[in-house]
Image 1 (tube, rainbow, N blue to C red):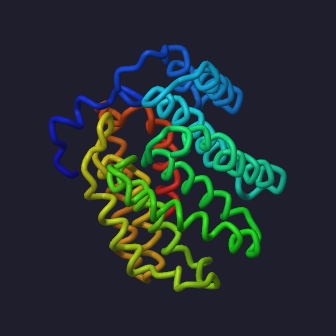
Image 2 (image 1 turned 180 degrees about the horizontal axis):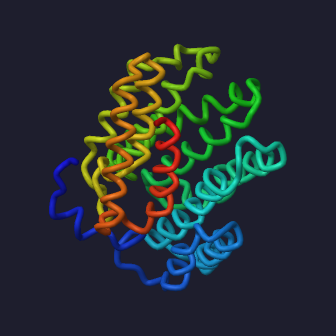
Length: 273
């Protein structure tokens, strides 16, 4: 298990801890129940949307839209099956609405500055939608995805936000064998491995934790190693990831913003074993 620093132990508190004029207590309490089912996730979304509608500004607006987008990512990624035709269609709509409507509430034009949260959440939802899209749809959205990744990584904090999240998304795209047919040399698992290692080594974004406390970073590395034909390393990493993150959860070192996602990630990594 990697060594934890003192900062990590103080950050298991939930969503962003920046001082805010808006009252997030109700929304955060509902968000903590998102893994109880879709209705719970939708209630949390509505609560965060109310804060946005009430005219939240600056960091309050970022935090509220983060909450909205996180419910979309959790609903589509963990509450809807990619293997069932009807749920697959719903999943596509969820991610499409996430990046075309929800996240746009904190676009640079509306905020007055470029937040890494905007670019990460936009890129994440585009990439997730691509998993359930046709080749033509992927090609149409590829420039938007690349733009979000490039501008996000150029924004202050872009390489550390959400545990190196933009690096993780870029690694997932470049390490996905389905990207072989896309133009521009997008498929590059060797580069993907370097990107995911950078995500794992990412420092803590203000109010969050370091990259090595994000299970998704290790889940992606497990996949990339497997793609590269390094099966033994992939399996060993999967085993240590399941063990380590089970311990992190027990010790309360995982913030509420990614607690349910970490539980879901562990289940996915177990499949690699």
